[in-house]
Length: 151
Image 1 (cartoon, rainbow, N blue to C red):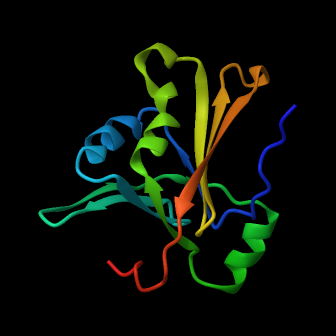
Image 2 (image 1 turned 45 degrees about the horizontal axis):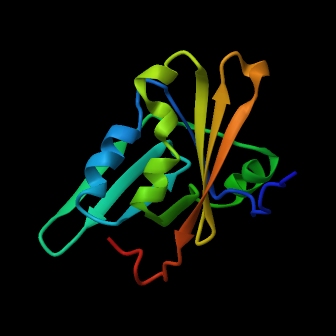
């Protein structure tokens, strides 16, 4: 019997539409860099970014659905739109998205990406039908100082 890791409340929680998968983009970015920067905002935006000596590539996702719980709602009332930047191992991120293959079509009802700054990225996949259950992936992140977060 294993318990999930204890993590802080997410800084950013975004629900994706199933027709906008991340897997194909991550597969291509993985060939360019071993690490992917994931920039998320509760305004419903996510940016995947890779950089090396020769190139800098960004992929933008917008119109995502911010998921707001009671704690996030209180935080939003007191400050600007919450944002979060994570540095993730591209192979580990890709491994957490293997369910986005053609054979899983119809077996997943939704998925949510949760971002906890300098701690964890969580991918929560709700199966279809929803009473079947869910799968949660916990992806460790690399520590980023505030100096490294500047674009």
